[in-house]
Image (cartoon, rainbow, N blue to C red; front, side):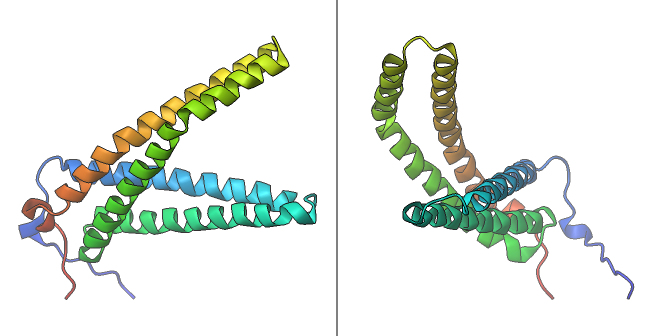
Length: 181
């Protein structure tokens, strides 16, 4: 069966389209997320035989979260690919997904920020309890750095995703998407 392509000259893009670059970035990040959730789920699955019956429920809950996040990241990949290919069916669902993701980043970042003092206190307690262990100091410094970087990335993601939601609804962007015939 031959592949047929139709050239639609009236909606051909001219120049750089920043929203497409943003969608590519979102696609790459969602792909990275899929790999991370899959690897974590595989590690948990390998540990299920070694876990006691009392801890099996917590392990299953972690596995369920990994599967849920993996499925959400996969859906995001499909929607991003549809938008990159300028498929009309993908624009509105990607806007909804980006809005939901922005709200999730805002909520989870707010929770992390609210728990910063608890995290800081727990890391300080670990340092005083275990003394001058250089590896522990390095691990605590690394954990604090990762916590701050995560908060920063979440703070950057909210306006980025909001801009993408807005940009995908502009007439110029809407005109570039193919409609089903």
